[in-house]
Length: 411
Image 1 (cartoon, helix red, strand yellow):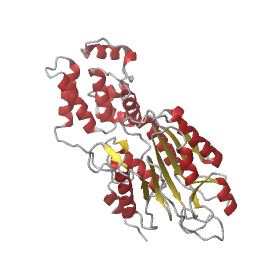
Image 2 (cartoon, one colour; image 1 turned 60 degrees about the vertical axis):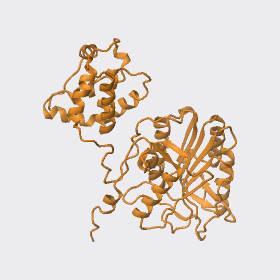
Image 3 (tube, helix red, strand yellow; image 1 turned 45 degrees about the horizontal axis):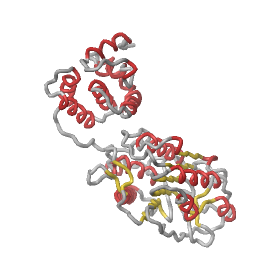
Image 4 (cartoon, one colour; image 1 turned 60 degrees about the horizontal axis):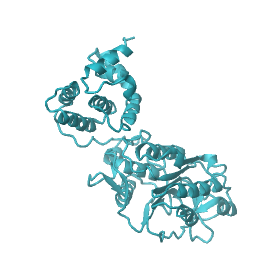
């Protein structure tokens, strides 16, 4: 077994002092233990350097903590940039190194000298964007903190295993990833963010959480994310978001579901500045295959869905007819792609912002290109469709063409 470099507390303290910072720093002032950074960047045999590859999760944790520092020192910025390298965010690391060097052009202190060395090691080839992934990337790893949601409140619902209705693989995973993004990247307070999964998501729980979020978001935005089953209301005038305890009868669907109109009324009942509702559900009353009715013997219908009349409301919906999974992935396609869109996948003009129109257009184009087994056309209802949903975290989406042209099916 290859030896692993062990960094003692004394060695770390020596390194901090050697950084030449104008203000002495204690270990408590740093955002990580330095072990992963030093092991990764110390000149060591290849066997030991490879040992750092499994530390990516450590790097991400350090990046998250470093992003919360209000006035980081130059030395802390160097560590932050190194951790960005560790998770593959090379251009962000380059930008931070350049800022460090610009702050000390004479390179009096070692952070600037080290930043210069790291820039040389990374090369001078400009790469404002990463090469896009050639497979559906994980959205569980939250991108860098962009903020903007500190006054917001949210409700995220994921029902993958309802009591009676068909399962929806990946629904809870998508909801959990949305929770991570909203709280870690946008900065929503966990106390104002409710995550309801599977049995927790009854009609009563969803409405109660929506009303509470509307009151909590004073001057901020209310988010409502739903990943689960939908159905048409009796008469077809609206769409229902079905609770986990809904039974396979028309009466139960109506009784245990929340209509979109009822939900939006609850979300608008507080002092929030705006509302964003995301519905990843099929409102035709069918299972995820788009064919099997939720109520045996019934016939799928298309509800008449009306755009919200009030200003400041944005409704992004997966489809009126059918919603389903990503090709070759056990994830509901719409909420997965929309989350990626907010990461930055949809920032087509690279202005650092993702609007509702950009997100809607991106998801629709990917679904049209990648999905062949159903006609899933997402919808956007908003009085101001060009409203900014979130700052872009600079993430680049997958190479959809490469995914589509992947392995050839064998018979």
